[in-house]
Length: 69
Image 1 (tube, one colour):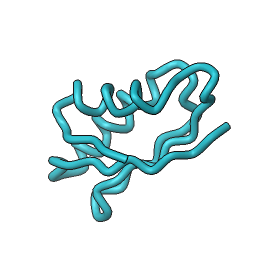
Image 2: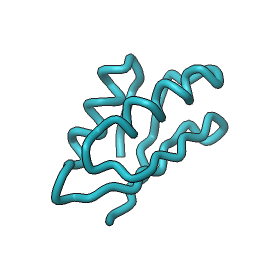
Image 3: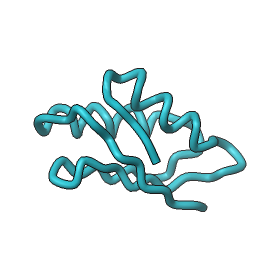
């Protein structure tokens, strides 16, 4: 397992946090996503053999938020 911190822009409420958490945890290979509104970030634990960081960023962006490492 590997852990990465993703900076998430555009979150304004708890619903945003839930949306980002859901899209990340639905990806195969993601074990856990801890999304924090105050720090505008997501700490994601995942299996790099199953999912790449680019896919994590793409999932967040597809949900309507900005994402960067």
